[in-house]
Length: 169
Image 1 (tube, rainbow, N blue to C red):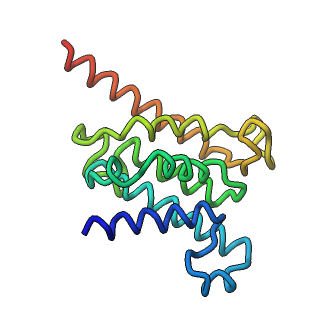
Image 2: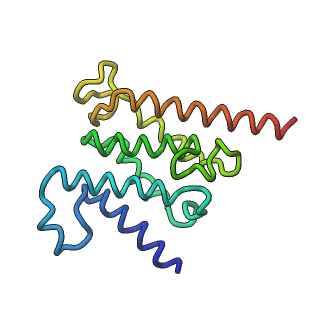
Protein backbone atom coordinates (compact mmCIF):
# COMPACT_ATOMS: atom_id res chain seq x y z
CA UNK A 1 0.00 0.00 0.00
CA UNK A 2 1.14 3.56 -0.71
CA UNK A 3 1.03 4.54 2.97
CA UNK A 4 3.64 1.86 3.77
CA UNK A 5 5.92 3.18 1.05
CA UNK A 6 5.51 6.69 2.39
CA UNK A 7 6.41 5.48 5.90
CA UNK A 8 9.57 3.78 4.62
CA UNK A 9 10.72 7.01 2.97
CA UNK A 10 9.89 8.92 6.16
CA UNK A 11 11.83 6.54 8.43
CA UNK A 12 14.93 6.62 6.22
CA UNK A 13 14.79 10.43 6.05
CA UNK A 14 14.35 10.65 9.81
CA UNK A 15 17.49 8.55 10.34
CA UNK A 16 19.46 11.01 8.20
CA UNK A 17 17.89 14.05 9.88
CA UNK A 18 18.66 12.68 13.34
CA UNK A 19 22.35 12.06 12.50
CA UNK A 20 21.97 8.30 12.46
CA UNK A 21 19.78 7.78 15.49
CA UNK A 22 17.15 5.04 15.15
CA UNK A 23 13.55 6.27 14.89
CA UNK A 24 12.47 4.39 18.03
CA UNK A 25 13.16 6.05 21.40
CA UNK A 26 13.70 2.56 22.83
CA UNK A 27 16.55 1.91 20.40
CA UNK A 28 18.11 5.38 20.56
CA UNK A 29 19.64 4.82 23.99
CA UNK A 30 21.55 1.80 22.65
CA UNK A 31 22.95 3.58 19.60
CA UNK A 32 25.60 5.86 21.00
CA UNK A 33 28.76 5.00 19.08
CA UNK A 34 29.90 7.10 16.14
CA UNK A 35 30.34 3.96 14.02
CA UNK A 36 26.81 2.69 14.70
CA UNK A 37 25.27 6.03 13.81
CA UNK A 38 27.39 6.28 10.66
CA UNK A 39 26.30 2.76 9.65
CA UNK A 40 22.64 3.76 10.00
CA UNK A 41 23.17 6.94 7.96
CA UNK A 42 25.01 4.96 5.29
CA UNK A 43 22.22 2.38 5.10
CA UNK A 44 19.49 5.04 5.02
CA UNK A 45 21.18 7.03 2.24
CA UNK A 46 21.92 4.00 0.05
CA UNK A 47 18.43 2.60 0.39
CA UNK A 48 16.78 5.95 -0.28
CA UNK A 49 18.75 6.16 -3.51
CA UNK A 50 17.72 2.59 -4.39
CA UNK A 51 14.07 3.43 -3.77
CA UNK A 52 14.54 6.29 -6.24
CA UNK A 53 15.47 3.90 -9.05
CA UNK A 54 13.49 5.24 -11.99
CA UNK A 55 12.18 1.77 -12.85
CA UNK A 56 10.30 1.71 -9.51
CA UNK A 57 8.59 5.04 -10.24
CA UNK A 58 8.46 5.95 -6.54
CA UNK A 59 10.74 8.98 -6.45
CA UNK A 60 8.35 11.49 -7.99
CA UNK A 61 5.56 10.64 -5.56
CA UNK A 62 7.39 9.91 -2.32
CA UNK A 63 10.68 11.86 -2.29
CA UNK A 64 9.44 15.36 -1.55
CA UNK A 65 11.81 18.33 -2.10
CA UNK A 66 12.57 18.62 1.62
CA UNK A 67 13.44 14.93 1.72
CA UNK A 68 15.74 15.33 -1.25
CA UNK A 69 17.60 18.05 0.63
CA UNK A 70 17.99 15.77 3.66
CA UNK A 71 19.23 12.97 1.40
CA UNK A 72 21.79 15.34 -0.09
CA UNK A 73 23.37 15.73 3.37
CA UNK A 74 24.80 12.21 3.00
CA UNK A 75 27.04 13.56 0.24
CA UNK A 76 28.57 15.96 2.77
CA UNK A 77 28.79 13.57 5.72
CA UNK A 78 31.75 13.88 8.06
CA UNK A 79 32.20 10.09 8.03
CA UNK A 80 34.07 8.82 5.00
CA UNK A 81 32.14 5.53 4.79
CA UNK A 82 28.79 7.32 4.57
CA UNK A 83 29.97 9.74 1.93
CA UNK A 84 31.72 7.05 -0.14
CA UNK A 85 28.68 4.76 -0.10
CA UNK A 86 26.32 7.56 -1.14
CA UNK A 87 28.65 8.59 -3.97
CA UNK A 88 29.13 5.00 -5.14
CA UNK A 89 25.36 4.44 -5.20
CA UNK A 90 24.84 7.69 -7.11
CA UNK A 91 27.50 6.63 -9.63
CA UNK A 92 25.70 3.34 -10.22
CA UNK A 93 22.37 5.14 -10.57
CA UNK A 94 23.78 7.60 -13.10
CA UNK A 95 25.44 4.91 -15.22
CA UNK A 96 22.83 2.14 -14.92
CA UNK A 97 25.11 -0.31 -13.14
CA UNK A 98 24.70 -2.61 -10.16
CA UNK A 99 21.13 -2.59 -8.83
CA UNK A 100 20.23 -0.13 -11.60
CA UNK A 101 21.41 -2.41 -14.42
CA UNK A 102 17.88 -3.22 -15.60
CA UNK A 103 17.27 0.45 -16.21
CA UNK A 104 19.46 3.49 -16.11
CA UNK A 105 20.90 5.56 -18.84
CA UNK A 106 23.23 2.76 -20.00
CA UNK A 107 20.32 0.67 -21.28
CA UNK A 108 18.41 3.65 -22.58
CA UNK A 109 15.20 2.67 -20.81
CA UNK A 110 15.26 4.80 -17.64
CA UNK A 111 17.25 8.00 -17.38
CA UNK A 112 17.83 9.25 -13.83
CA UNK A 113 15.94 12.30 -12.67
CA UNK A 114 18.02 15.43 -13.23
CA UNK A 115 17.86 16.33 -9.55
CA UNK A 116 20.09 13.30 -8.92
CA UNK A 117 22.52 14.46 -11.58
CA UNK A 118 22.69 17.78 -9.72
CA UNK A 119 23.97 15.99 -6.58
CA UNK A 120 27.37 15.86 -8.28
CA UNK A 121 28.08 19.38 -6.99
CA UNK A 122 28.19 17.90 -3.48
CA UNK A 123 30.85 15.38 -4.46
CA UNK A 124 33.76 17.84 -4.52
CA UNK A 125 36.85 16.84 -2.60
CA UNK A 126 39.92 18.71 -1.49
CA UNK A 127 42.84 18.83 -3.90
CA UNK A 128 45.13 16.81 -1.67
CA UNK A 129 42.63 14.22 -0.43
CA UNK A 130 43.51 14.57 3.27
CA UNK A 131 41.19 15.32 6.18
CA UNK A 132 38.48 17.91 5.63
CA UNK A 133 38.45 21.11 3.65
CA UNK A 134 36.26 24.03 2.76
CA UNK A 135 36.06 22.67 -0.81
CA UNK A 136 33.71 19.94 0.37
CA UNK A 137 31.93 21.70 3.23
CA UNK A 138 34.16 20.06 5.84
CA UNK A 139 32.91 16.65 4.74
CA UNK A 140 35.23 13.66 4.88
CA UNK A 141 37.53 13.38 1.88
CA UNK A 142 36.92 10.36 -0.28
CA UNK A 143 39.85 10.54 -2.69
CA UNK A 144 39.28 8.74 -5.98
CA UNK A 145 35.59 8.13 -5.25
CA UNK A 146 34.99 11.84 -5.91
CA UNK A 147 36.62 11.63 -9.32
CA UNK A 148 34.82 8.44 -10.31
CA UNK A 149 31.46 9.93 -9.29
CA UNK A 150 32.16 13.03 -11.40
CA UNK A 151 33.06 10.75 -14.32
CA UNK A 152 29.77 8.86 -13.89
CA UNK A 153 27.89 12.16 -14.04
CA UNK A 154 29.78 13.18 -17.20
CA UNK A 155 28.95 9.83 -18.79
CA UNK A 156 25.28 10.27 -17.87
CA UNK A 157 25.16 13.83 -19.21
CA UNK A 158 26.86 12.80 -22.46
CA UNK A 159 24.37 9.98 -22.97
CA UNK A 160 21.45 12.27 -22.19
CA UNK A 161 22.79 14.84 -24.66
CA UNK A 162 23.17 12.19 -27.42
CA UNK A 163 19.63 10.97 -26.73
CA UNK A 164 18.24 14.49 -27.01
CA UNK A 165 20.17 15.18 -30.20
CA UNK A 166 19.03 11.95 -31.84
CA UNK A 167 15.42 12.64 -30.81
CA UNK A 168 15.55 16.13 -32.29
CA UNK A 169 17.20 14.96 -35.51
